[in-house]
Length: 269
Image (tube, rainbow, N blue to C red; front, side, top):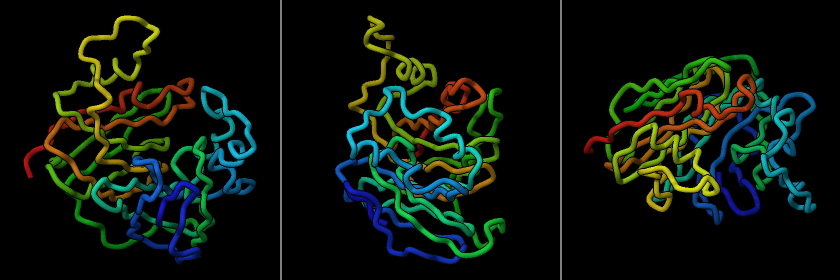
């Protein structure tokens, strides 16, 4: 698929259910543009996966984002995953598409890009079986809404491109945002930087300098029980993994506030 400033261009409009390698080319003005696959449920359309219509009509979006009840259905439907394009080439993800009508979206219900339709023929309830890509790193998303979440990571992150397996073993959807920093990071430092507001006055010590951040790894929103394999390309710097999905069981607190944040070393290639 190709991401442009006007939407998503797909090479196919209909495919049989199966495990697919998806190449994501970013030709938009957003260097961090992403794409994912959401199966639509009864009563929902592509318009429910973006704020394109509202923005086109000049309707302002609430500063705090869309109302939780407008996207609550995303916690119940099948979301296969997705990725973003890499800085040095197309992004790649292997994911499982079960039968149904999908929207290819920007992984955000408030995104300005309209979603594109994709029909997947086959049994909507049948799990996809087949060979798995060999992963260098495995991330398991664990936990329970209202209680807490975490990433459990096995394997070793190394500099250079590698396949990362991501399994959602919790009770809510998740994303994995991987960002890197040229200095040593701690989870407390990251949390303090996320929570800092300039109106609060003096910034905390060791505040992260956003201009030094890079984003070499992204696993798009995936629903409960799904697995995806994402190509990520790390530098030999500190690597942080974070989930920003809100928890409806915890007053919409982002998952990173409930423990879904971890820092990893990146070894030499």
